[in-house]
Image 1 (cartoon, rainbow, N blue to C red):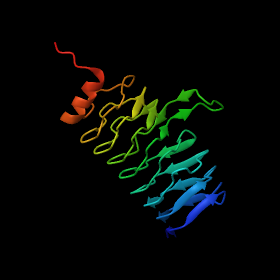
Image 2 (cartoon, rainbow, N blue to C red):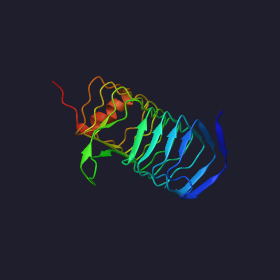
Image 3 (tube, helix red, strand yellow):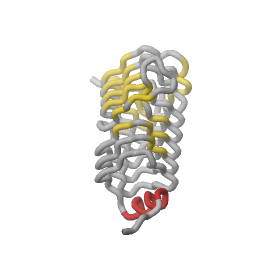
Image 4 (tube, rainbow, N blue to C red):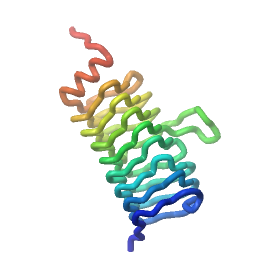
Length: 193
């Protein structure tokens, strides 16, 4: 049976170190909540606000974040597997993995099992991420930076790519519609044979 949390406000350390399995959070707010050592597995977040939550050695596995706000978060100290961020707001977020004991040396973050369909990721950063075959269809990727990412067969159809930066990323068989192609070309320039 799924545990349900409705319209609750979490602040401080009450969730620190807790394991949540098969839980449903609806219209909950995580105001400066410390999720240090917290683990969420098979959980759904519906219309929740996690913006400003403190993520430190946190884990999210097979979680959905429908219509939720997760802005201004640094996912560096998190484990993300099979998460669906579709229809969520993730503005100004950082997706990267740091080497153990380091504060700035990155290792590869594998996000291939995640979805970002119709998510608002404006001004977010993806650094050294594996994003092959990931769906960003319909997403707002305005001013998003993809630094040293693998974007093979990634779906960018109907996305807003104004000001997005792909300079150091590997793109092969990437799926773009005409507007995406023009935005990508405008950021790189077109070279005709």
